[in-house]
Image (cartoon, rainbow, N blue to C red; front, side, top):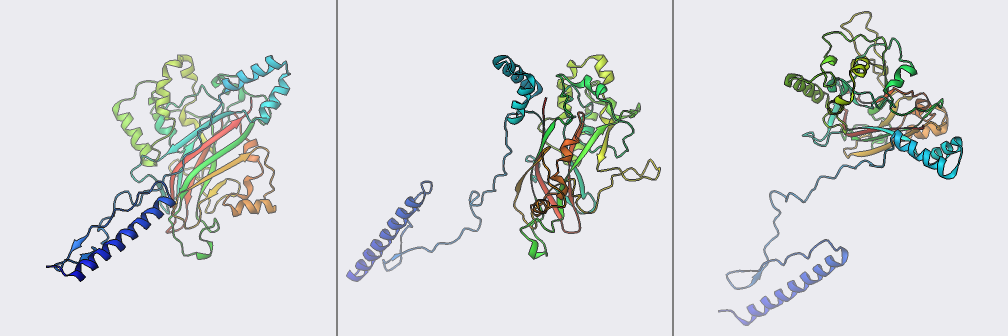
Length: 417
């Protein structure tokens, strides 16, 4: 039988506990609209009838939604003008306002209404959601290539080759502009330097640790980075009869073995999810290509690297490889990863034809401090682009323990008509 003291103590504990729960719930609702008031703890009765609050015991396995994985940053999906779009706007401005064509070009240039060619590789569906580039072997990885700039009628004849690095052979002879014009649907620009801007978006991080404590959290001393490369077609290329480029969907249907091999080769490189799959493009547009155009189509195996350069194979056909520098090249370095950071960072880098930073100036030192190449701020890379060029991105890691984890890479190239 309960005594008066037992009942009084029970009521006192109940009042104090209820009041504290009410205050805690009120504060919670005041601080945020999304959180709900905590549930009231159940009472338990001990053998003597006194109230007892059970202890809070942490669960052995935390709830699944307690530590959500951070969402990777999304790339900007802004409007990308085609040559037809730009020509239509030109016609509208010139007819509606009776402006001379030169002035219309100046207006579009000031508005940055340029043709855009883009390419993206997204590894979000990869089991690990990343592609890891570690020290030897595989410390230099080809990641992405744009389609030949301005050549909108050109189609890759082999998707497997298209998603792989070019054969590291020297370029013997470039195609002339007149030879490339047959792969252009709309008239191309007559400007000496039509290309205006190259934009890189990269989501990546390094291994997340380092013994170099003073440089942690900065871009100094980072041994993982990304380079911009350049490919061109070789007019002296000879596609042999057994070349795999002859078995792409542009020429005839692939057999299941061919498809499986190409898929396996691309996955071995880590290129799983391109926004525009080259094999699908070739299949979709195969009926739009005439027999004559198919015969004149430049094969994918004709792609040659301008940078990174092929290594000297000393005349041996079995020693074909690339020459990758030990440290970042200041003229091609897009971005270093932040030193010892395991958090994905979205790096947005723009190279403009109007850039004029001297590589030896204090402004170039600021670029280096931000993880960029000192020689990438003078605009030469953009101004030297030609129609038919292909911009590439390479990922690198150096020295034991360093790792470059890549989630997404995107290139956008803009030019004026």
